[in-house]
Length: 305
Image (tube, rainbow, N blue to C red; front, side, top):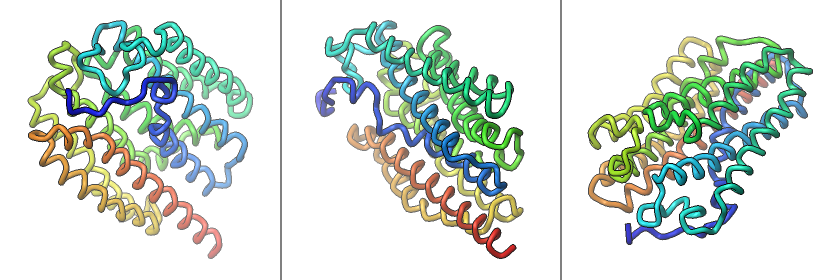
């Protein structure tokens, strides 16, 4: 690990603000569909977005804490979350910061229940539980359920929950539209697991990828990145998405970089480290373009009608 450039340990790195798009994209998708149906309130939407950021931050902080107390992160193998192994931050402080993010989310949930009804509590409980128990408590990451959790909680339930708060009901349309992004946000975690494959196996971390060969886990990563596009094409073909959503196909340029990098990752640590940031960029660009395409289409349709 000597070739890995160390990050500066501190609160900024512990919160990892560059990961917040993982929450912004699914919230934006749910909000775009609600906007098209005339069920939209800006201040409620911004509160939902804030809660998404809080949940993502809580997951980042509690993951750092959980991996440290379990002995997974050590000075020898940890270069991306060095806050606790180097003593830059105290474990209790990181734990309390993560719990505070969850508490603020729960507080916002009271407002959402007042606005949309008690059904919001189910989405809130799922989100808080998913963010809080990733490596703490039941630690579902260590049981190979991390990718499944991200797919369901962030990929599906977050846009559905956003729509539910804004519109007061559920929508099959939102569920279907959320699928392409669900695969891409899961691919980010998959890239993380592939990048850390050998270290995780040595530490006994039972991620989903660790149950396959390295080559097999890399194939899963690529499949998740690619899956978004045939699903997107089908949604447009069957009229579930407006044709302007095809704007998201511009992100194929990012997919090309992801595929090219993955071919070099097995033999090059530098390319292995790029598995996650390239996938982050792919997910962000695809989600932003998809949301923009939907809003353009919905606006155009409303203008014609």
